[in-house]
Length: 452
Image 1 (cartoon, rainbow, N blue to C red):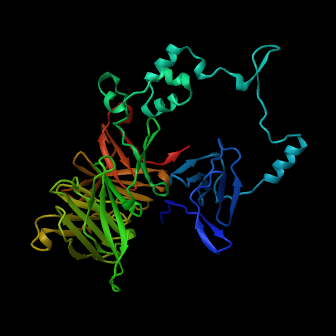
Image 2 (cartoon, rainbow, N blue to C red; image 1 turned 90 degrees about the vertical axis):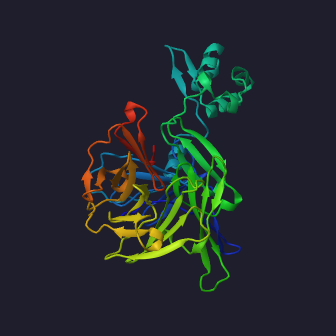
Image 3 (cartoon, rainbow, N blue to C red; image 1 turned 180 degrees about the horizontal axis):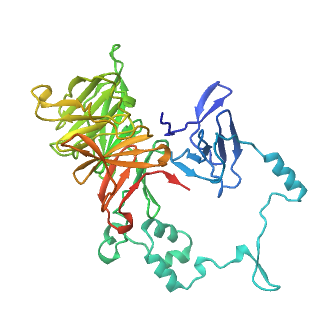
């Protein structure tokens, strides 16, 4: 069974009201978790152990994971690669009292000690007096400024009066053209993170490590991000009703963080995302956009379809011989005029939008004879690549990756040994395959796992 960490929540007990209160940030504290207990320590060395982080390990896994409470990212490191196997989950041990005892014996006061650097036989200078960037000649600094990305350029300007003179104010909206345009890594998709606690979407350029924030509208603060495609975010929002037999309803909302355009679809019966997959065929603002919601808990597959933002959802059901087992952290792809769905165990289902006499022309079929090409794996994804349907199977935390192509004539999976000049990007809310803009990006699959 695949187990991953998508979120950690921390609560503090209010002894007066005897209630739990959510902890939004813990900048001066760091948490260490193991299978039996947890340790809370002050973040003394913030350059080595980050505050507002939860460090944890996994059974039979030598990696160390750090979950950032504020932005929801997970960092992975391998501090001890040469440990012998078999390997079990370790335990944490606090050595704070030993550190204090050693400090007292050495006469340390806990204050910062100045480092000395040898530069000659008898001459020494303090490390803090080393030459810094602003000691460079002004013409060199101006040349450096011209190569800075916008975020770094703005940060450089606010350092001092001198830096503001070296880097004059620029109207980026009007100046980013022609030869003056900075070379963004537009050939590589940016990473999107839904920082719900801070009311923003954050975009990270993985090449330059620039981070941009887009404020979330108040109406979208209590939503769940389900799917991303063509610059649009598909989100689900739940609300209460006055109907005692159907107390909750779900509503799909499209949001474009760049244009701030919002498209709201009609509500329907409560949606269980853990057993559902959502997708759309084209831009939601186009007249031919088709939105689908497919759910499967037992052997019954429930299908909802909306064409051209209809006032009501079309609904029908399809029976299968076995539990299709759809998973939320996956999504369909639209290819050859149909939606393709992959189940948790690697099964394949097809939702055709035309050709049927029933259900407004739609039909759903589980390809029973199309077996999963992998017997054991952690996650599986579908990717549309240059008109081909690819399946990507990934072991826990990316220990191995295998790719297969769907033969639409023979209805079988065929192993892929080369992606050619294409690059694929895979995450839990979207997949994308494009032609590589640089030779070093060919034949690669990128996963948004933050590594130290």
